[in-house]
Length: 597
Picture (tube, rainbow, N blue to C red):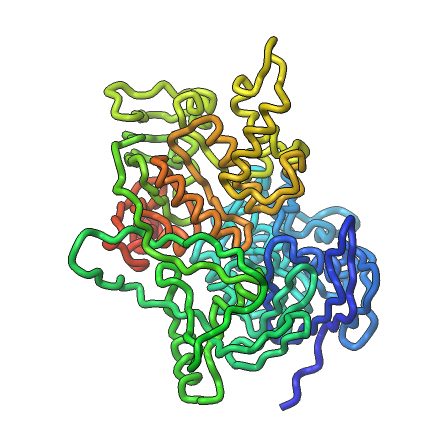
């Protein structure tokens, strides 16, 4: 059967800034199809999306929309053609209401006056589609958390005429139920004949929602594949590439854990060091190439995908598409498999929180974390994960409760972040750009800013040579990829920016590290690097707490997982005891009465 005529056809697209960003990109987007676009940070994904949505002009190349020349002069021009975009970076107006942000530039008016009753009614309908029923439409956006603000962006993108919806990392701050709701809306749009361009680093989501996938590397399209078949459309940009059997969907295990053999509890799976090999593909031994699915700790089961895998087994001519193959195309190298880490067992209790309470956000939360341990905090958005970390760090004042450090009998006096840092506690926030880094400053300043006295010379003046030496040592230690420590942090990728924040707190000699969404908005290769870094930090004896909306991430890297629900700590699971079903049941437990009462 002939392929459907593309809704949007791109040929020979080029874009350069100081260096080339897109090189001869060609892409077809079809009606009724979800087309995934993947690649490492800096591959050109967002630049391409900005060109399609009228935010950036290409240097050369051609685009045709429904067979007609298409060259949007602005975002508004693109929207008039039915092309809408939800961007990775939030672009909301904090002082305006949720409703005003959703319909910004197209507020309902009568005789030139905004009709707020109609605005709020339409906003409620748009908000309900993404699960924001509980938020008043007149509430200022600045009062919402990052995840809820992301949902407001998505609600705006889903409202109005939509021929092509571009989603750039739409789920970075969303929980699993919120992702499922978004996917329902995507399927509705797809059934209505819209095209969806889905940009994400989350491979499990792509295999769940996408029909085709295009891989960008260094600004070039290196492959386009149909998910669900072995059809391969690789370009000559990948030399000596031999298509290998691939699977349409990730192997997603049952929620029941694999039984461990007798003996001591297994250590958590930890991604091995990234193999920085050449871009040449690894040669397979004779015989059928093995399928290399996603590590079990990062996998889920889907009835739809199980059915599809059965169909693939029955069709001898079709073979599985592996996650490894997509990643190899993205990064030009092979990433090490996850494997049990041979870390030492956790040591003494480093931090013990007792009865923390702040309004209804945090209600009588108690927990402890040991040296050399990674403790995860799971829960739905608004469950109190971030708020708990902020109380421990002194960013917010608790109504009650205390924090004890390193076995002390008396509670630590933590009334501010400064007190926490002096006590050896660091918080790496979910918004590293505004709360963790000084983006215009070079790497060396960001690394040393929390302990300038250590790099000061006689008279208290900054010793530039000493500062550079410290920054260079930590850059090597943490594998921070930068031209030099003089490079502005704003120019680094998300993963390397996160490493700079870690370097800052390591230089400050913090022993307890609190991570809030540590891999939000960074690519799959950088995620594995961050996972390895967390394991290395635990190996050094650091006590680590990780709050994440990505349950699969927590299952992969944590020794224990504490589950928050409606401000309370519902349960804590040891590795080997948990299942995804148990964790999700605990996460929902605090809302069952409200939903059924």
